[in-house]
Image (cartoon, rainbow, N blue to C red; front, side, top):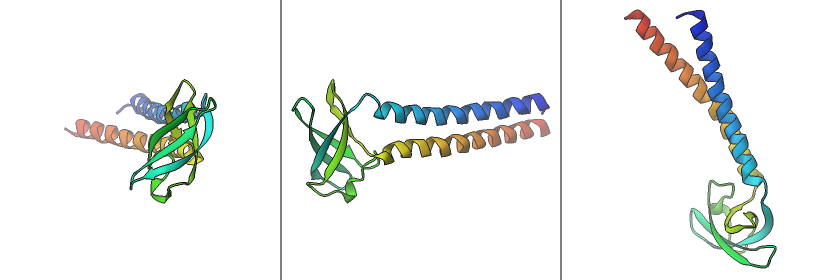
Length: 135
């Protein structure tokens, strides 16, 4: 394999990694920008889901389902527990629980998954190139 092609593969792998990291940052940014804040409470829970109720700034009462893994762990929640909520004022039913762990989870995922997937991709490309070169 030529040196130029090898560096091209390294650059491609770096771009894929960077795209995943930037995607995670952008997803976190859009999750939290232009959202109104409210305090809600857990009104019902199952093992993996919680029903959260909150009141918008205009006084509308909204209920939505939040599931574990989206920044709020319902397994640890009890009925009546307070929950920070973020919502789009134009569509309050599309609310989400609002915790810093949701944003950090996206950032950590992108930061780990980007380079990991890039390394796997680079390794597979190198392995394929070696196999093609020896046959």
